Amino acid sequence: MIYDDAGIFLPDTKSNLVYSRLARRLRALGMSSFRDYVVHVQSRSGRDERHHLINALTTNLTHFFREPHHYEIARRELAKEALERTANGGRYRVWSAGCSTGEEAYSLAITLLDAEPELLNRDVQILGTDIDSNVVETATKGAYTRDVVAPVEPRLLQRYFEAGWGPSCEKMVIGDDVRRMVTFKTLNLMQHWPMATKFDAIFCRNVVIYFDEATKSVLWERFAQQMKPEGWLFIGHSERISGAARQRFTSAGLTTYRVQR
Image (cartoon, helix red, strand yellow):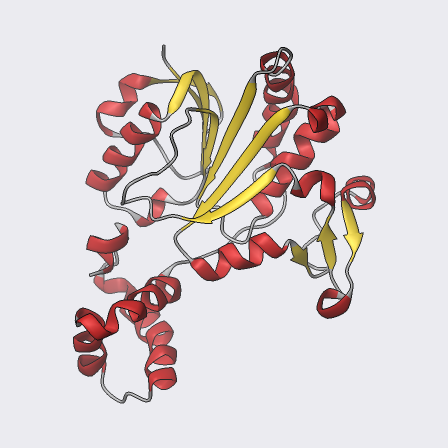
């Protein structure tokens, strides 16, 4: 079911993980049987529960400035490229696909602004999407505990974050300059993509490791079609482009690619 809905492949070796995560949903619904739960989520009345099912079974490991070599490229190449392409009213668009709780998208925005402060006055937007509505809600709030922001340089923390208030009084909150550059939406990568725009860069890191080879191949090709000529694709450290899409990309660094014209 989760493979059909979200493309996530869960082999038998993941049975303990599935059990532990779905047991919480059974308790929340007052159910005692996994068989009853399966019947429920497959029924018309259980349609909303399927969202909870996907949220429960997706993994959302992330942190600020994860895989720093990608942000070095963003600082060195993407910031300059964004400045050039927006010089005469142009736009620059980046997609964080599988954004989790938002650290990736915010890290990228901070990197671009820190490299080229003028981008604050340009049409530069970063879209963060994730299938898990819970993490998208967290990303939109942009409030993080002190341990979560620990990887952020003190200089960047002081410049691009604010001390929290109210319910977030013990957290650090993303500042307005960064927040204006980033938007978050819930999106299932296996379904229709409503974005009409072509992206200058796509970050899809440590996402396709949960898909089988057939699903990966389809996704790489869809990314290529959604990118501008010579657009950048950044993937996870253990991921490789597979299938026919390999002919569409050229290597531009460690787990970094550019789509061919």
